[in-house]
Image 1 (cartoon, helix red, strand yellow):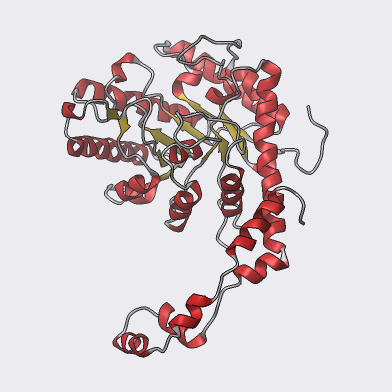
Image 2: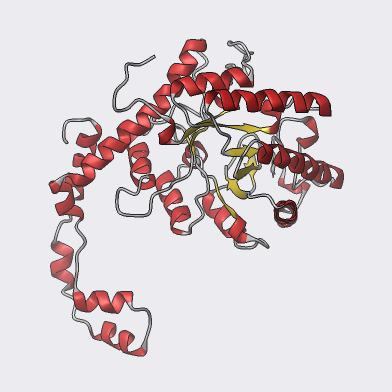
Amino acid sequence: MHTMDTFTPTPADRFTFGLWTVGNPGRDPFGPSVRATQSPNRIVAKLAECGAYGVNLHDEDLIPFGASAAERDRIVKEFKGALKDNGMVVPMATTNLFSQPIFKDGAFTSNDPRVRTFALQKTMRAMDLGVELGAKTYVFWGGREGTESDACRSPIDAMKRFRDAINFLCGYVRDQGYDLRFALEAKPNEPRGDIYLATTGHMLHFISTLDEPERVGVNPEVAHETMAGLSFVHNIAQAMEAGKLYHIDLNGQRIGRYDQDLRFGSEDLKQAFLTVRLLEGIPGNDPYTGPLHFDAHAYRTEDDEGVWEFAVGCMRTYKILKSRALAFEADPDVQEIIAERTDDALDALLNGGYSTEAAEAISAASIDVDTIAKKGLGYERLDQLLVEHMMGVRG
């Protein structure tokens, strides 16, 4: 393990991993596993050694599909013991609605009412499990909620079915008295040709149509937005501004590739820098205070030791980028460029909302268009300062 320094992760940093992330055995569509399958209890212990705060899970990450009630209870008891022994928590849980063959054409949006019923049944049981383990956030990723052939159903029907499912599950949580809120996770494609509700923006609008929109937020993932060529920073900013960033998945991704789930910060370091800067509230916004979850996995080239190097690397990179972002923000040269322009009279008009008087005053305002247009804004220098701070030559 690494020598202790200021970037060594600790539970106070709120870093979490899924059982499916560090537990990934290196299997891919073109080849079988290259690492041994790890038990959930070992994963908990190893993550604690690495300085993580908690571990998240799908139902099937812990309980084998089709397990008996007695087997389920034994596994949960032992897992809770591992959590206690290692000082770990489970902040988030979710349901696997994509692996079993019954979900080959969706779960909540399937054309078959038997499939939709089983999906609700499985999710309610998984919610019970998550709450038993202490989870406060429940994530929904519609991995099979989509199509290859759009002739199979109207996407309007799919939206109605998805809405009905989320409304039903909100009712279940309310009826059970669970302290649980939902986070919807968007993705544009893979494993389906097109997945419904493809981006965080789609999800935010969808939430506004629900019976209990206050219970439901989003869980944006770096890879899922980046693979579509979108700005992850802009998407989480929209979610934060709406008060809907309930959870987040951090990893690395190249634009236009399949969902790579690479180590956080290993691709597009500038976007990672800006993501950390925003999440930490460094530009002046309210910070995100929830778990910082890494939905990523080690390269297929790695053995067991490499898996834990990967996990520590995700967390160290986040902390290093946070320190670099703080130094960037404190740089007088940066502050000079990004300092907000003020004009007392115009600010009062712009920030006071609409009135007949304000409309008349704005219509009559004298703006020196040519002088303003000729003045450079210094953003080339600003971006170079950002790069130099990321590279550690300033601050």
